[in-house]
Image 1 (spheres, rainbow, N blue to C red):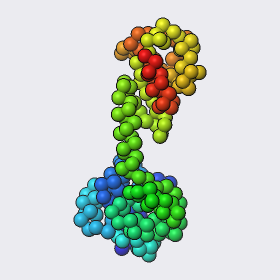
Image 2 (cartoon, rainbow, N blue to C red; image 1 turned 90 degrees about the vertical axis):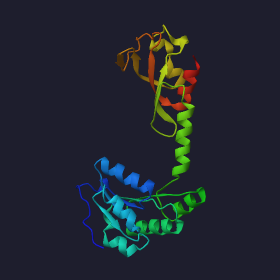
Image 3 (cartoon, rainbow, N blue to C red; image 1 turned 135 degrees about the vertical axis):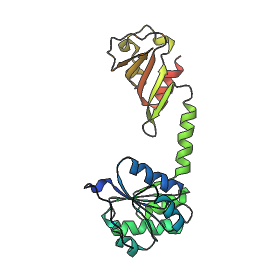
Image 4 (cartoon, helix red, strand yellow; image 1 turned 60 degrees about the vertical axis):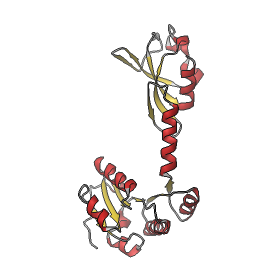
Length: 227
C-alpha cells in the first residue's frame, strides 16, 4: 500500500499507532486532537473504515510484515505505539519490526507482566499494562476521596486541595511550616471566591481556607489527617 505520510515539520510530533481497538483508537484520537500527526494502522478492514471517519491517516496493513511497514515509511516516525492486545505474537512481531526499522521510541502494551518482560527484552522502550495502570489510578482517586480536589502528576505526586486543618488555622504559612514538616509547597489558597496565588510566607491561614498544595500524595494525606 501507498500512503501520504502526515507531516508537520517536526518529526518528534509524528506517531505511528498499530492496532485500533478501543485503546489504540482512543490514543490515536487523543494525539490527533492535541495537534500531533498520527498514522493509524490495523489489519482489520472494518476497524480501518470506522476510524478513518474521524482520523485523516488510517490504513489497512499487516504490521507484522516489516516490508509493509517500510513501504509506508514507518522508519521515519520517531514514536511507534503497538496497541495489539488480543494476539501477543502479532504484538511481538510488530514491536520487533519497529525496532529493526529504527523507530526511535517504541512503546507497546501488554496484558501480563510476563508479556511485559518479553517485550522489553526484544527492544521495546516502554511497555504499559493498561488494566493494571487504570486500576492503580482508580485506587488513588478513591483513596483521595477526602481531598477537595485532586490532580495526579505522576505515580506518587500531585496537586491536591485540602481544607485547612484546624491546628494550622490562625498561623502564618511560615509558622505552619508545611514545607518543612510535610515536604509540600502551598501554591495557592482558595478563600471563598478569592484565589491567592503564590501566597506569601506571612499569609495567615483562615478558617475554611482551601490549601492548594503540590508534592507527594502520601504527604498530602498526612497533612489532611492533621485535621
